[in-house]
Length: 426
Image 1 (cartoon, rainbow, N blue to C red):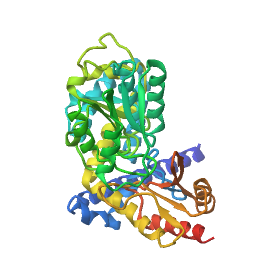
Image 2: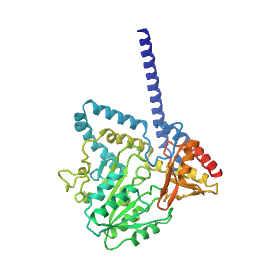
Image 3: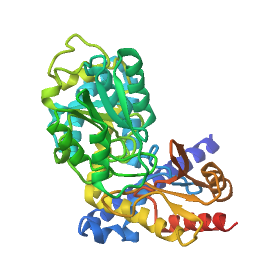
Image 4: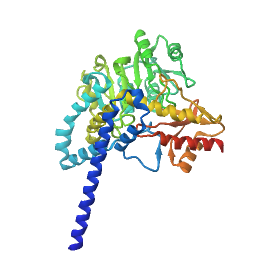
């Protein structure tokens, strides 16, 4: 009995100490965010002390250096805790808490997302990822045999496969563009899309940021040009939402889809679909419901039973993101990319595959080492230095992609640079 009492006293003492430590971290992060907002975005970008304190909000591995945030980003602890809280609540009485409580909470999430996107809540649907959002558009649009869509061979595979399947099933035709990246001229992209356009062209599928290399396309000019020609613009924004400072009103696309588990650091499997108000009624939902031709954006959320916990915790991710600010986050991410890029190219064997101009790149950076396969570089970085990156071999692209996040420090990147230079010198 005495040993049991001793155990519980120690356990409670540990729990109390842990709780106090977590509270101290939370207060320090909050203080750092307050000071960050006193700085201009450019000034804040290089303040390592403030960003180091903000990094405490994350629970990332202290041994593995994660430089593949472009695939899926980790969530701050407040987001993880929210997911746990909503999940445990659901398990108390699933059909009550899920359907009568949490399901109604989607409206608050919708308003927060719409505010962040710079549009109306009546144009935003909450879903699970960019693929689901954009597939809703691909399969929801009514096209005729022979209608054409223009897209690049450097677009995301899931989007390419969706349009290829529609081509096979419905007889539409894809007009392909293939570009050599990086490109630092808006007119080059405009000419490529225009030259591929014919009288039968109905759609331009535009990737805001190409996931393979980080290339930013002049999406505003492309959407404007599409409108002039009465062509539908569909924008894949998987890598730009909560990464760069913009509003959907800036380029006014007809449709836009993004993942929230990338740069927003929202729970895994969360995404957003934007449909311009006048287009909602004419777009068929991917998952059928009783009012498929309704002009209500909510018709795209008929998914059946799913976990409401990740969806609800999107709100905490937005709050954390807003604490940093769109422009401050963009400037910090670009600063980190430029930091390592400028250092690795000191070795003549290292080549960059991304622009250093701010209008054409941000956090995503890519490089290659002369005479080496990208996957071999990735393997050596991880096996010898415990640095996680991703190898890219797609169409005419062969490189290593590096994607830091706001919790990444320049000290982390010094470790990465040192590893790259040693590999290049070996």
